[in-house]
Length: 265
Image (cartoon, rainbow, N blue to C red; front, top):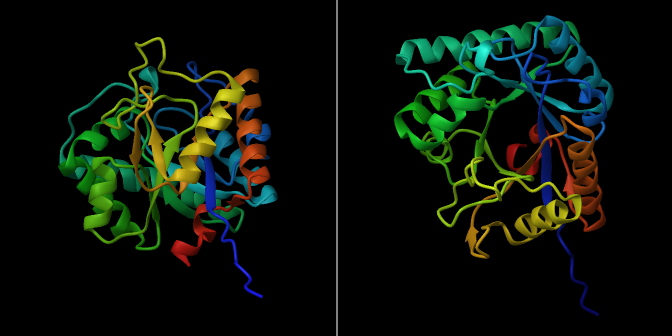
């Protein structure tokens, strides 16, 4: 008799956390840390402070969630969403300083920062600019060659990580629609966001199963997918996040922290 072994797909769920500021609430962080596998922790430059970093790391350790730095431009007034033109040395310092801040706190709990995901305008700019993406990638690799660079799939950040032969994971966004060129639909458009939990969970499952982006037009673009980025800064989005996790598990997906995925072991 022939037995077929069905290989489950490994997938990670990540979320930006510790982003307490005048722009954003961290009220649901404890709830989200029961859903996600990896936390991208604000390091105080766009949001958050030592108190929020301590809180996220403490709960992450309790829940077996891996910890990542979420560095940004030093722009708390605009939540790190305003573009800035900095020199290469300034960019490097920006990343290293924020990593060091978070790692120092993680060390108190016997934990370590295992991945880096840039935030806001810094991330958006690096998605489009191979030179900036390469500076970020080199800086992260120089800090620690075992650090995982969490990048939007198909972006210049993805390209830079591949060229440097570093550890990287490709993410998709659970609550966003994609254009036919693989870019996210602008938030200025009415169909940019997916707010219905049923639609979101189907959207994510299809992308993970087919390893392709679902474009709003119906087009599919083949890509690498290791991680799903969720949000949960209000009751409705928290419900969507729970629905996505449950649906992935029900469909045989193997949820892992980034640093425990087979590709990194």
